[in-house]
Length: 400
Image (cartoon, rainbow, N blue to C red; front, side, top):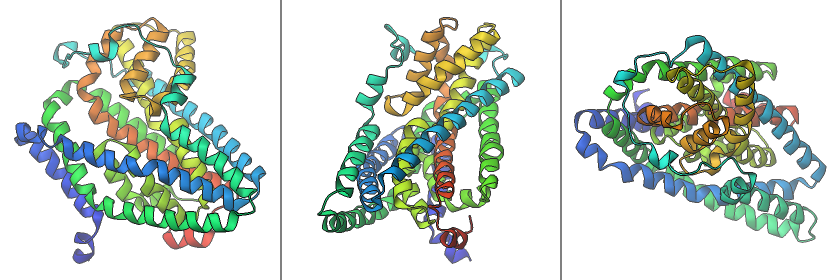
């Protein structure tokens, strides 16, 4: 049993996270120098995202042949995303209003310079900027077009065969790159603790507890109920993707686990076409964790500044976040940029309030990213089950 544990990648990722926390706490000066380990690992993983999305979607659509089914899956996914993310926004607002994490002593809060996020005129959410800066969406659209062309081509079989060979080599390369996950997780966690320190979390502990508790509630109650309705198990699914969750925990980026998630969903019995359509689209339109955080952060800042939000303003907040949260995946420094654009749209809460969140945003980003990846995995399973595109034998063999 012990031999099996110490030869598993999960063990070393978890060990690296613990080591990163210890180094960051006891030797922050050295820990700050480990930042490149995390950033380079994330950059390396991101190199695989575009080719994997492209190959998966093109092969899925090209092999499917029935384009009506492709459109049906895409439409069903978008409807599902909008419903679930709206639920996450509402839950975030309700929990923040009930537990009032912003009603705390401000004197101990770590004020930092938020000028790089808030200086100058704030631009409202723009669909043009969203598509222009979101590489995932661009690759997704290009792949769908190529897949549709391939499905009607008389050369479909030889092209599909060559693309499958290329896909095999891409995923093989990814497999070896993932052996570097412990190094990336160590660097990301050590730098975070070394820069911000554990003590800076104390004044904002109430907000962090609320955010983490709300996301746990969302995962096990909301997503868990959806899974049970389709006769699937959320706990078994979480155990199945535990390595991806740990990678996200160490790197604070759900994108690092995206390729691995797609591989595991296919091994679980989900058809390649559903995985290729739902997962990449979900990374832009199904950001459950980001939605929860944004709604709670706005309420938190309103409470800090003693700004009373009427029912109409709360409804407006949810409406604005339904748009701005969709752009989070395509914006650099997504959390603060999207939060700033939301506050600017409301004109009621001072943008300077973002300074209160700078010190702990990095720690809450793990919760956002983990919830995002779990939400996208659940969405893929649910849509596959509803389309009879989930191999029940393979799913049962895994235990989900």
